[in-house]
Image (tube, rainbow, N blue to C red):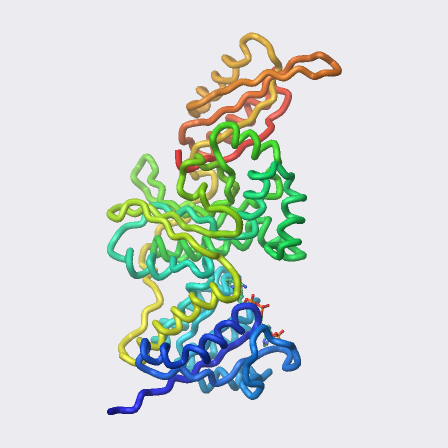
Amino acid sequence: MTEMRTLKVALLGCGNVGAQVARILIEDADALAARTGARLELSGIAVRNLGTKRDVELPQELFTTDAETLVKDADLVIELMGGIEPARTLILSALSNGACVVTGNKALLAQDGPTLYEEADKAGVQLSYEAAVAGAIPILRPIRDSLSGDRITRVLGIVNGTTNFILDQMDSTGAQFADALAEAQRLGYAEADPTADVEGHDAAAKAAILATLSFHTRFALENVHCEGITKVSAADIAAAKDAGFVIKLLAIAEKLTDADGGEGISVRVHPTLLPREHPLAAVRGAFNAVFIEAENAGELMFYGQGAGGTPTASAVLGDLVSAARRLVLGGPQRTETTTGHVPALPIDAAVTSYYIGLDVADQPGVLAKIAQIFAENGVSIEIMRQTIHRDAESNVESAELRIVTHRASEAALAATVEAVKGLDVINSVTSVLRVEGV
Ligand code: NAP
């Protein structure tokens, strides 16, 4: 019997995810060898501080602060340090040395992915990053491999567990944003500085990756229009609920065709109203899900845990076994195909339905004036509902109008809202939110 080959695995980082990856590599060594056709030997773990207590017990002799030397001698490198540097330099060094790299670093991929992909292609090695989008959920490989014979037309993703938890909390308890955020922080779903999550930056990095793989064209962070959830109020949530919708922060990448047949991709992150019967509306708490529409496959949905050390380690190990199998079998390693060259569209070109809340004077003829402005701007109204309020002190009546439009361009909607604001019967525009799935 021929002896099984050994592949050296260097692990960079031993935090939430890295510690679990190290544990599984050691505990499941025999099973991983059987699945891979090679023994995966953990050759070392690079960290910042050798004295830090780790989540799992690991042999002390594996630890080093010299990541550069560790990388030089590895067949496979797992980068779980996070941040831009030194992760970027170490990954580039590993790729140019001929090592396959597995990373979960969405921030780095969104900022400088093309440099990394090019280096991997040049060196003929695999760069995999399943863990970078939606944690444990296998989503990038299905898009890249299983759907490579199809044409994806649209991807809608709940890819940030923190914001989904906050919006779900607001929806189920009626809490304001600040209170739901405080609860998320208390339970460990949100960091002390929640900016990257609540402003949508984390979801935007994932949207760029999803769009790149789905449309075979490289999209960078600057191609992603990004709005977070900090302006979503308890009143927005209540109004949405009343109208049969739920508000979710969605990462959206979709192909749009203009009147002349020109194609472009709209990549964006923003709070979105979804009908409560849409499959993504059922994604509660900190869970993630990605909903894909493809020409031949139709609708697909992927659901699971979007973060956490052990779930994310599952995605990392999947990438590792896949890369190791390719090393065992030999042959060229391909990261992705980016031959599409479809342009990224500005947010003005996005086409969607809208929910508009208006506080209006309760006078005859108001509805007709508003409807006329919508018609003049080419935005057609699907639903218009009016509720009358009487101020207890002043005894003045006002009306709340809730309008859901048919699909229209962002530019047409912006012009409509500006024109509506100018009407003397409008007290205020209380909310403008995009709607998907109707
Ligand atoms: P973490 O808990 O902060 O751990 C980071 C690890 O990297 C620590 O062990 C740290 O060493 C080490 N490190 C940081 N800078 C270093 C440097 N300059 N040199 C050597 N070691 C360094 O991070 P994490 O939560 O495991 O996340 C790791 C990566 O996975 C990130 O890119 C993250 O975005 C991604 N990811 C995480 C999750 C999740 O649920 N946590 C989900 C999906 C993707 P010390 O321990 O000595 O400080």
